[in-house]
Every structure is written in structure tokens, then in C-alpha cells.
Amino acid sequence: MLDPTTGPEFARIGSPLDTFPLPLTLDRAAPDPLHAQLAAQVRAAALAGTLPAGTALPGSRSLAAALGVTRGVVTAAFEALLLDGTLEARPGSGTRVAAGVAGEATPSAADLPAWLTLPGPAPVDPPAAGPGLHFRAGVAGTHVLDLRAWRAAWATAAHDVPDGDYGDPAGEPDLRAALAAFVGRARGLRADPARLLVTAGSLSALGLVARLLPPGSRALVENPGYRAAWQALQDAGLEVLPVPVDEGGLVTEGLPPARLVVVTPSHQYPLGVRMTLPRRLALLRWARQHDALVVEDDYDGEFRYGAPPLPPLASLEGAEGRVLYLGTLSKLLTPAVRTGFLVAPPALMPALVRARALADSGHNRVTQAALTHFLRGGHLDRHVRRARRWHGQQQAALARALAPLAPEVVLGGIEAGLHACLHLPSALPAAGVAARLARRGVHVSTLEGYTFAGTVPNALLLGYGGLTVAEIERGAREIVEAVRAGR
Image (cartoon, rainbow, N blue to C red; front, side):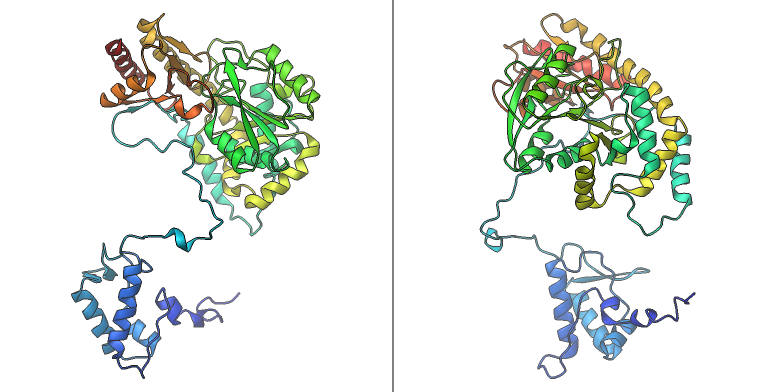
């Protein structure tokens, strides 16, 4: 085995590029002295941000040796930069680039290709910022997570040093088998591991599916619906049409021809309604009639509170070859693991795996190893049972605290999932109520950003998964007061 201090690579460590993070050129024939040349180049790099604030500069001896000059040249340059504020010297931490040296970047549109049209910001909610209570949809708490089992899973994953391979872009076989078994237990869906692809979440899976369709193909989405999914399909070059949703889920009567439809039948996002069984069957008939694919995003499907479970679309007769089932661990565990899965017809798997390989070569193998241990030990099943009880208490607290507003105000979508919709009378605009709540330190969303066409439902979106029961009760009392103040 080569000694790392004597091997051939070690001889290059003292080169200028390793000693200093940018190339420096000193010209002995130039009229400016060497120390002035050095100071000018360091100053220009700091002003441009190439040397960020806080960057530690090498010692004067090592830099002088790398540049082939005397130590006095480097010392004189550093002294000049200390005097003009480009550098600062901290006792015990050496010489560093001072804070606030770099100017604000001023990119010009003229510097970009004329044909390039930059998109707007991603249609996703930013992390909750500032004090107060945030009723954020799509957020799950980790209050009932078994920390001992969680830490043991990651310790197990870190025990073995990973090899140099990227791994299977479809996902590690052990994790695929564990996820297939779990979805069978939790949702009654028979999933062969060979039909299961590990993804970075539901939106990642939808992006892979979109690659299957020819550019310009028509895709249908729920309205109101998941705005990030809408945008992802549009960015993929598809024609995206909104389809209305009512109390029975996606309205299947009169669906136009399309090659793809995306639905959230278990707990519609954001209205929270469940798609009825007759409509599920009607959607499958429509898919066969129009030779279309159905993406079933089983959003919040594991959390039900007294409502009887409805079978996934993917498990119904006629779904074979038509339905792609999307699942995620973001709501079951935490979005931090960025892991989901896609159960697809066997004939589509090669194309989906190819798309994943070209997108990012597959999922993080250390995360996969930890999740495999967590699933195989039965910890995810136990966690889901605890989480279901916990979220049931949250749901009951929200419904109980908002009950005084009935019947004028209706709390919908409360039978499942981690969010509900508070439907307000037309004389009480949701935006005004949301503004009053924000002044009280309670932050909620309206459905304006989730509606792609037609009238925006007059409702507040209340995500309660990341709050405690006490926080839900306190926030709900403020909601009651804000609604009553607006009447």
C-alpha cells in the first residue's frame, strides 16, 4: 500500500493552485513592484467574490515559496490589504478576507443567450419563517418517532463503508423488497419488487413519468390541485388541462381525451375529499377507452380517522398496465429522507429506470441502507400505528375547536390525512380572514395558489401535521375569533 506522504500525488500538494484558491501571476518585468501586483490580484478576487468573506489565506512563508518570491513581498502585500480593509487579521485564526468586501452581484440580461427564457420561482411553499403558528400543508411531525430505532438504523447504515459503485438506479434490491411488502400490508396493494422504483419523492416520480410521454401530449390534473405537479408537467413540455373536483373527488364525467391524468384519490390535495369508488372505476374505463395512463398519488393514504378505507386505484380490476402508483415516506417519517417509490406496470419499468439513471444515477445508498433496516425491523409499521393515533388526536382537536363555527362554516377533508379545508361563506373572503390571522400570529393559506382555472374556492387550508395538540387548539381559537370578527 502506498504511503500517502511519499506517493507520487503528495509532491503536488505544495503547488500554487493548492496553496492559494486562484492562480496568481507575478511579472518581474512589469513596472509595478511584485508586492503591489500580488495585492492587486488578491483585492480584485475579494471584490469579485472569488475569495469569499472569511476565506483564510495561506501563511506568508508557504505562499512566498509557492510563488518563488521572498517572504517580504508577501508580507508587504498583506500589510497593504490589511490597511485598506480587504483583509483582517484575527489572533489565533490567521489572515482572512474581511466581511463586506465583495459588492452586490449585478447580472445583466445582456449576458444571457437571447433565446433563453428564465422561469419564475418554483411553485412551492418556502419553509416557515418567523414566530407564530404555521398551519402548513404537507408537513408531518416527528413527535412519535422512535429515536432509538431511528439512530440504530443510521448507525447500521454507517457501519459498512460503501463501495465505489452508484448502485442500481431502480433502488437497492433489499429496500425495494421491504417497500413492496410494506405497501402490501398498509394499502393492500400487491407490489412485486421488480415493479417498484425508489424515487426522491412523489414529485421526482412524476417527473420520471412525464419523460415517457411525447412532447406536447395532453395531461389532466385536479383543479384545485397540486401546483408543483402542474408546473412539473408544464416544464416537461406537456399540455396541462385542469379538471374540476367536487365532494366526490375528480369529476370523471366528460373527461376529455388525454395521455395522462394525475389524481390524489385517497385525500385530495388540497380539498381533502376522497374519490368515490364509482368514479375510480369510471376513471379506469376512461383510461382504457383513451389509451391513457393514470398516476395515482396516494397522498396521506395511510392516515384515516374513522373513515372506511377505499382500495387504491392500482389494486382495482382493469388497473394493470394503466396505473402508476406513487408513494412517499415524507408524511410517514419525515420529508428529510427525501424518499418515495413508484409502482409501475412491468413493461414501463425499463424506461423509468433509464430515466432515473439519466436524471441522477439513482437514490442515495446510505439513506437506502438506513431505511431498509428501519423497515425490516418492523419499526415503520409501529411508527405508522403511533403516528395514526397522534394525528387522530390532532384531527379531533381541530374539529372540536372549530365546531362553534358550524353550520355556517364547514370543515372539509377531515376524515383522513394531515390537512383540512375550512370552507367560508361567500360574504367572508378567505384572504381577509387569512390576513387577520397573520396579524394574530397564526399563518394559514387560501386556495388561490392551488386553483388553475375558474372560481377560487373560498376556503382556508389548514395543515396540522406539524403542530402539537396544544398549538392546534390555540390556533383554532384564533381562527374562530378571526372568522367571527369578519362577520
